[in-house]
Amino acid sequence: MADAICIFNKESLRAPKKSPLLPRLVFVTFAMICGVYICSICIKQISTQGTAKFLNIRIFQEPCNTSGIEQWELPYVHYPKPETFDREECACNPVRYFAILSMQRSGSGWFETLLNSHINVSSNGEIFGSKERRANISAIVKVLDKVYNLDWFSSASKNECNAAVGFKWMLNQGVLEHHKGIVDYFNENGVHAIFLFRRNLLRRMVSVMANSYDKSKRLLNGTHKSHVHSSEEAKVLATYKPTINTTTLLAELKHVDDRAIRAINYFKTTRHIVVYYEDVVGNNTKLKEVQDFLRLPYRELTSRQVKIHTSPLSEHIDNWDEIEQVLKGTSYESFLQSDYQM
Image (cartoon, rainbow, N blue to C red; front, side, top):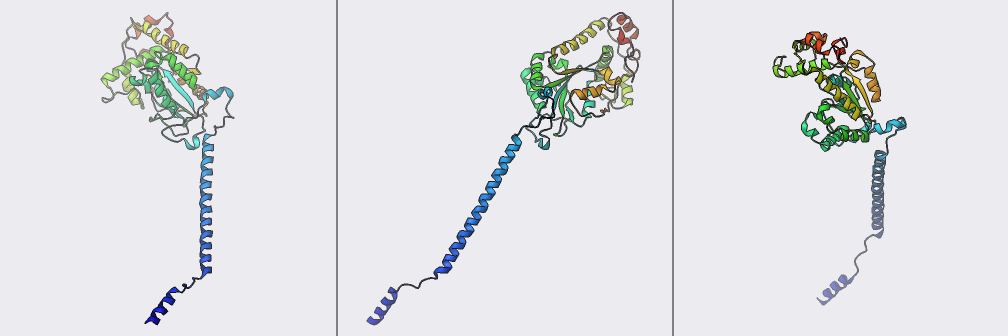
């Protein structure tokens, strides 16, 4: 028994058998090589991504090339960065800002549709019709910033490759009231002012009165339309012949004339052009002048709108004989004549 115990103790005191050393070394070496390789791949990928991001930032921040733009033009060339979308490949396409300054029933709606037929122009309509937007100069500037940053969306908004963006603005919608702040904004931000007026203010008066009449009578199947797209609709609206107050006629014509002169004088320090409706109707090159003014690539401009009052004025005014007597011998006598042919 003692011998058995003794034998057991001797066996238990013997050193365990050694594991093979070489396979372990091979395994550890292989694991180290794989680890180093994987780490090097990861570091390379991180480095590449970082470089790519750095390059992207550099490309994004690099200023657009203006070498093809004349020095005097630079204050009027802009590269908007909209908050609502990315201009992407058009980021360095220069954009001109403009505003059509006009009076109601002076052809501004028709003129704007002509500009909007240009693939690179967005004119966003009569945006200051809302009183809240023109309550003060701060409200006006807020709207202007949004329009010119390409963040104002309307049915006229084009894609991100605009070459000119603007809107139409009636003189009685805060233009004269806040003219100083607006002129400062136009000069500081390089906005082009396009004045559009009518030479024949008597024709404008007929259009104003006829439009006011249709608002209440709704001659076209119970619907009021300020502009029409068919000759049939135009004929219906032209049936109304207003009776003009001869007592106040001269004063009203002078008031409208003075407003136009005052507006042009207020904006004389801005880059501006004065366009007359009659010239656009009768002169095919006038629209080319406007496109040159905005430095646009030339296009043939079209509109679906149809003129309403196409006959001589004597056929559109109910008390024509009285009007003739009042205007003859005055500076407005020329309004009695046919001023253009349609």
